[in-house]
Structure formats: C-alpha cells, structure tokens
Length: 245
Image (cartoon, rainbow, N blue to C red; front, side, top):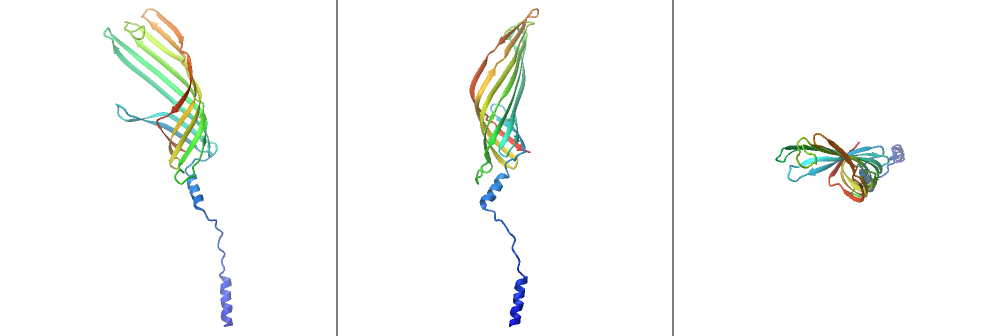
C-alpha cells in the first residue's frame, strides 16, 4: 500500500505542465480590428474620379468630370488636390441664303483646388465601412474662349470676305470652399462617395478682344467684361470612385 502511494505521488509531480499565458480578445476589440482594416493609414495615397451618368435624348454614357489626389499625413488627416480641365471645339456651317458662314467656338476651363480633410472613423457594427469628413479647399481657375466666324463682319450677318473674331483673355476664378463628404469602402482600398461644399467665389470675366474685317480694313478693340463675387452651394451630382495605394 505504501509503495503504491509513493509511485502515484511520483507520477503526479512529473506530469505538471504550466499553461501558456493568453490574453482573451473581446468581441468589441475584434470588431474594432475589423473596422480599421478598411481605412487608409498614414503614408497612403488615394486617387479618385467623379463619374457622371448622362442620360436624356442621347444614349447613356459615363464621363469623368474631375480627378482628386489625397495624401494621408496621419490616419485621419489628409492633404488633397482636386483638378478639373475641360476643352471643347465646335464648328458649324451656317447657310443664310446669301452664302455660307463657318462658325467655330473654342473653350478651355481649368481649375486646381488644394486643401485638406479631417476624417472620422465609424466604429459601429453597421457603419464601419463609412468615413465621413470635413475640410477646406482653395480653388484657382482659368478660362479661355474664342469665337470666330467667316463671311461676316459683325458676328451675325453675312458679308462676303468679312471675318469676325472675339477672343476672351485674362478670365480667372479664385475662392474658398468649406466641404463635407463621406466615403464608403466597398472593399479594402476601394471606395465610392459624395461631397458637398459651400463657399465664396470671385470671378474675373476678363477682356473681350474683338477683331473685325471687311476684307480690306480691320479694326481691333478690347472691352473689359467686369467681375463678380458670390457665395455658392456646390453639389456634385456625380459619384466619386477611388482607390487607395
């Protein structure tokens, strides 16, 4: 009997194993880790384009209106630059009975708007893919416009051999916008969103430089077109689509 107990005691002392230390993860901490995997981190870049779905009498088409770049200085503090540029040229042949006139209209509009954003991560179970933000931007723009028509010396009526040209120069825009927007992360590093802004805008309409000719003599004059300042509510009806890299 004593021998049996002694053997048992030896077996118990030789099989003692200490369990490793483990820190349990709560349900809230697990959700928080899942939330943060969608959001960009400090050092990340993102680029996005605003897509416009145009309908009406013509077929449905998708156009790109503007492009924006972001640099995440901190997890929730972002430097941004918005860029927009459009150029168009339209040529029309006009028959006024007396003869044909060719009218061409060329226009370029460019804008760059540096600024910053402050994002707010949403930690809720059903809102963890959302990233609302507020910010400020400083838009600076330029516009060129030229109207030219042949066989006319007043820009409207037919005149054989005449020309009419109106070139707008020194047209510009400068302002400041307060912004509010929201990003929705459909997947890690891929988001869609919308943005609204309200701010002050000052526009200079530039000078209208008109040159007319009747085929023999020509005349040039420059007319200042004034300026305008106003408060604007800016809402882009397009959908912002972006990627983080």
